Length: 486
Image (cartoon, rainbow, N blue to C red; front, side, top):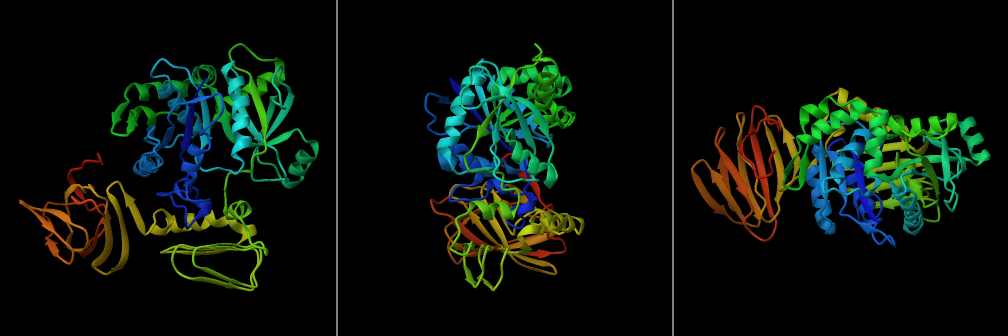
């Protein structure tokens, strides 16, 4: 049977600030091992016995498109990347994926996975997927409920009902979905044994999802179909109709379909208009890494319960998470702390208060501070730039251009630029001139002059750019040509 992995990559992960930011969220970060969470999500479906896997499909925000394309390229996993012009939650995202999966008159089983979750036991996950695929091939809507090991108040729950006929290993009908409970209720759920954490993982045929949306949310389906009818391929990406999708209501998979399936099963048996909802228990080391305390829980620890990554020294510490991206971080005599260092921000928080990190991000955004949404180092399809210094009327950036990378032909109304080549070779367009610069050579781009920077070589081009002028914002760019379609 053909399985289409569908990775939903729309979250912002603000509780993992300052590593995770709006313009570069947690699913793009290598928080567990060398792979990013998105790459790990794609990789964990490799080698499922008895199943044919289609290339991965990612549904994501336009802002992440080049990074996701590059991460899939690094894995040798070119796939389909469907771009959402605006966030409309998971039900429209899955509807777009189902429409995309049906392009070649196929009706694959969609394996729907959030991009930002961790599963440490890949074997257990793949065995559950095999079981789910068999049920989904028969027309069921399958979700995976995580077997709880604590009275967790940060997750929604699924109450499992009667055993699903003919399904082995504990698959049950879905009795109901429950919102995040208080501690007393969560403790009762744990004792009862029939409640599972809601993982957000699903399996179902593309046609089954579209039929369920037609029955439950025809307004969302109509908006997605209108947007899909206007879809166009743009390099690695599928762009859907922007205005049509903007009119789409926002709703989650659970609210739009799954809760309605559960309610009608509990009330009067399965109705013909809706498929059967089945939950499969899953014990596979799952975590949604919703906050720093959750990351601490899944990472390897020393004898004192500490997690240290990067340039970190710990003295007489216990149960502490300390991460450094660059500078030395030293902790002495502390416990139950989270310390995270990046180039432009440092977080210090008690592990019990990590859910409140989002309040810091909200405050930064209200103040208009860039640290709330973007890193000092910014990735671009051609490479990256790092803002190393800034002051009144000047800014200094370290620019790295990948081999073959080409910046847009552009000009600025408010700033001039000095370029100094540190290593590699640069091809410069300045007005009507085109010339090469090598190591230790420089040039000047006057204000208002059309210009372009390219790397014609086979090694990265590294440059220092000094900007000067009355306004230095990134929105002071007039693009005339751009190979990346920005």
